[in-house]
Image (tube, rainbow, N blue to C red; front, side, top):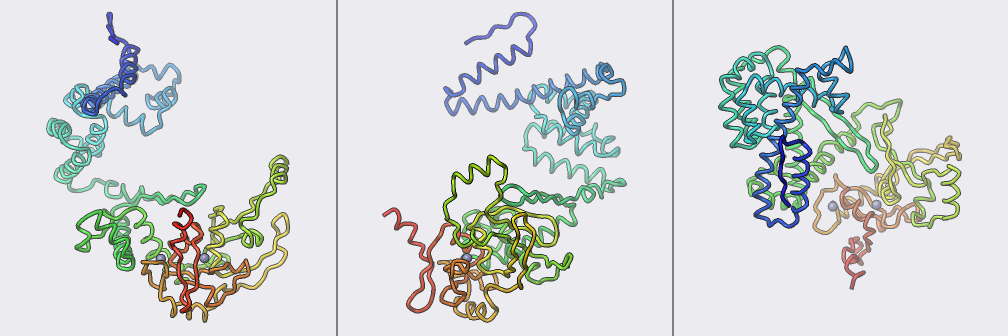
Length: 445
Ligand SMILES: [Zn+2]
Ligand SMILES: [Zn+2]
């Protein structure tokens, strides 16, 4: 397909060209695709430069006064183009910077420097008056550098430059990062997501604590060490640190070495008499027979008349907000080794009777269990006893006794695995329980 342009090209022409390119993309060889990719990356920069020129025309034309006499260019971009405030400000900043620094505009329009790199140069270079005054003398150097290096290398060089020309932070500067500190905890459908930002001081404390937790985790968990070694040869020299650990190793280290000791120490204040701990509520029949089939007709009726209530368990905190629904297997796992308080609720959820708090596994039995098992009994796991939970081979709610020959120590990861994969545990003739891993394969043979 060939496209001929007659007279002044339009945006529609460009869209037609892109459509034609997209249509043939599956017929390209890998080499051709790679060649196209570098040219399209340049084209994207050109297109971004064109966008900025349009924003600049909107800004200088004052069209934004027509729809709202009290408007601003930013409010116009927000309302007419559905930009959020951050994007509108960034576009406007770039538009004025292109007028002030023609080298920057030219490099972007020629496709040599991407918009993302332009943003990095402007974010660092225009951060305060001092830098802004100096930027003009250096802009040609930064444009040249931006065309040759990655964004992170460009950013590093700009920060070194800023440190040279602007060594004393202007008022508010040094506190900027600290002022932005936040920790967000999102309850998602199936878990909790942490998302945070900390300034350099608090941030380094976190790095120190996580590094320490990872070191401990590595010592206690040879599997993790192996993974890190495969990941990075430095691990052999003890450099098993934040950068070369995986997300799941960091998560385990965070819980095992930082969060669990805090909860176990019991040093957090109580709130309204409730200790800082997790609380699982579960209907007894759900624990006793998690597999019992659902009555389909009853379920249909309840869906239709809006009386469907959650039949499974919930896990929550006792000292503040936080609540998640969990499945029956998870509820069984959490109640395997727990403090139990029987609370009988009426159908609308009002407590009718409240029993005493008792530990499912009394202290003496737990001690004997630690002496017998030593630590996690899962094959090839050597988590120490302090990081394990007692698991009922037959769950107590289904009549399993809390006695040594119905208990086994498992670390939290393997406890979870035993419940979720329903791995059977057998008692050896020597009185030592074994995790029967081979069950997984016997099904298929
Ligand atoms: Zn268990
Ligand atoms: Zn284990």
